[in-house]
Image (cartoon, rainbow, N blue to C red; front, side, top):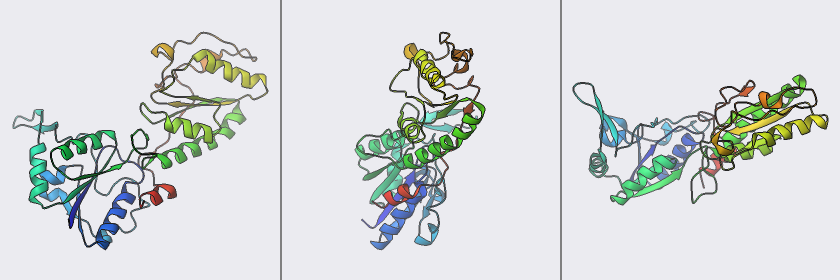
Length: 295
């Protein structure tokens, strides 16, 4: 094997460029040629979308967010949107063309960098006979058979930094700050950043929450002289019974209606007054993440 190809699929995450850098550097030392398929599998379907990657092409990219190869969430070759002459799109299975392109270009292995969706596609190609090496990439950290995925460490660092900065504002204005973090149906980012950032309440998708218990915790803070609270909510969190917008009334010492202040939690966040967001997918990879790319 002296010719390999690498692709990045799904949403971008910190560490993608660091993975590409490590693959190109390591393969070049072995005397292998490295190619990159742009926008997922498009390089296998369109030769113009397949690029040769030299060490000079990847210099300085480890600190850059995103991926130099581009990515897509709509590039599943087993169900790819294709427009006909009338401009109408329909889903077509082009996996046979991908396999033909892989063999025609003489690749010995495909390094697929992606999350659960992208690696599921790569697994299907492996069953068809394509040699595949999967690299677990997702900020959600929701993949099996690996302790941590690329992107997760940076996501937690970014979320924790946001929480650290919110404490002073919340304390100065006696506010309850609700921070909704990414993670889809996985609560890893919320759990790690919530603990690291000193949150008072952490709501996870895996554990349906009781709004009364949330209100009671925040009211307890005020009873002990702490007039502010930080609540971290994973985007997939839901209240017991699947609803997070109909809490019963509970009044704190100051006479404010606690339930009204926290209405809107439960993975939605649309009606929460003090809602904070943070950009993670395109962030630069953390030092830990970059180091792990070489392991």
